[in-house]
Length: 47
Image 1 (cartoon, one colour):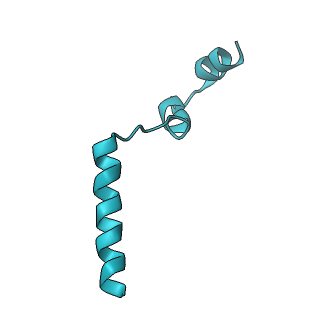
Image 2 (image 1 turned 90 degrees about the vertical axis):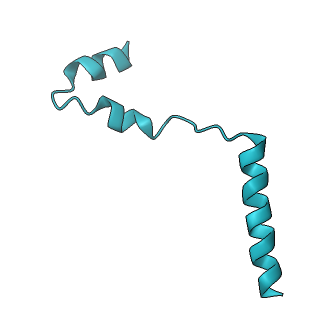
């Protein structure tokens, strides 16, 4: 109920902005693997 009240009483309608931070972005395994490869390549250039 508290969240409903916050939404209703929000005069600026900034609810999506406030709560967007609380949502989780889910990454696929392919996206994670891509980043791992990029990091490994970068670290390899430093060695």
